[in-house]
Image (cartoon, rainbow, N blue to C red; front, side):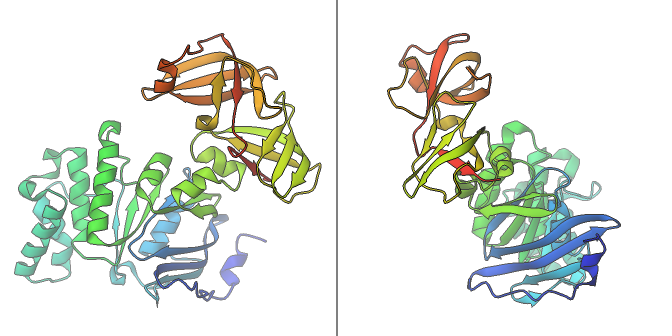
Length: 381
């Protein structure tokens, strides 16, 4: 299919999801810039009052999708429904949508209160109502006492809260956040994430945010979608996407993982055995996967699911021998890098408390790694 073909397709009709809480519906959405397909037939449903994150690396299409929701970019084809209304071709100023930009875009010559009031003044809202709504919004984000200050007199976190107040003061049905924490120092980012979630929950607004920071998406969103090459690869709760990735890409993109390549030698309803050249013993997983014997698969094991031992395990599977090549103390846990006998490097996260109560292995020590039979995820792609 050539990049120009999707523009010739008729407008897709959004199918009913059957979810009474569905608030945003995206159906077969496509965006093409010249010869580049930025968004490829995206289908997505966001629930009322949900914080939903679009997660992916730069250039994956997440910001283009957000801009189409805001109306700043026109869809090549497809449909966007908001609370049952088709807004695909509605101009941005007529959409009940507000967007908080990555740069915050505050007017430097205006006070905090004037920045928040700007949009209401443009709409011709009466002065007394503007005053009431502005200070209601500023109090919500705990910035009422800074109403007379200019943006340059505020910290990055305070500027972010002013930008949020400006977005909320117009009482949008849908709030869009573009990399909301990228301008903040790492030290205050986590606190601000939790504060922002608290504010959004209190307001009860539906929110779609774009981020490339997996920790941000995992800590803030009720659900998230992982994007690459203009497509959504997996969608679900942060726990489900982390614990049950559906591909090597998602397993490697969300958190850290150890990936092994192997061949299925046994596949029963209650277990599967996989021979892997990178491990000295077979991989045993406590569920079947219904794939043909001899098929090559990939196995993901998270670092925190791997145990580091001095003694050889007694089991016939799910362990390997190696040497500690690097050790980093991370506060609550220690991150081990272990070179297996096959030459493969793996990572294991060990709680600091557990290490303090035992003879902790150090660099160049011989160790054994092991994991439970429900710790591995088998991936076909």
